[in-house]
Image (cartoon, rainbow, N blue to C red; front, side):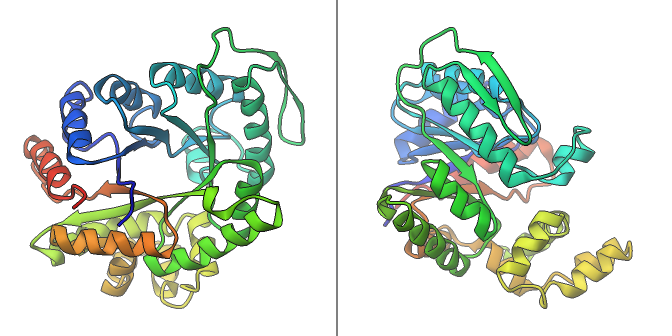
Length: 333
């Protein structure tokens, strides 16, 4: 069994202040990690609450965007969390996608590998107490220095999908963040990580592999599959994820879904998502079945499984209780 057992926060149906009691309980239940994401809520806010509610858990961002935030702003947020939870905070940085960068924020999504590399270098300078100075291809910064000392070194992780970014993540950071893949897919990703670690003189066992895993503990797997199909359709038509799954070998099984989506047939695209795809990419079943499936990810090379709960409750007033029940049901055995 893995020694780490993480949870994605914030949880649906639970207000941010209400998270404190549940996170405290979750830590007592054996959850070792709480990781946020940059979507519905600023990723640093739920982690700040977790820093005060927990005593031992590792806290991390998975991720903050290298295009949507400047390196000084990223460093300021990371330093604050490092002070709030000394020795417990990990900073995850990633490129995001053309959707988050261009459609949501009006930026330009170009040269993602270069951009992530340069942002990581600049942020690392600041977190190590240096003046931030970098003249790169996507970034030019100088003069910024943190005004408050960081109490302990902050590990920096990089989100990666395909091989080039995976290898670069190993070279420039302390760990790799992955998502949207099956337990068997992890074997291919982990092999690249280990190979690159050896190539650059790192101990492969020292490179963490953090994986966000979609999980739905339920007695109604058909309902869960129907709910997750919408998520598959929304994400796997984003160009970066489409290319990722082509690299993983799913081009043929996803072809009809992609073709219908490209023609504007959203209902047809949803209907083209097979149970096989859903069962590959989402952990569905009883709590014991879910735990066994999550362990398969760890046996394939994940060192930090981070559960992303899939809610089924349609009534918003009851969704918080559902989230809390799932947290309790999925506690590490």
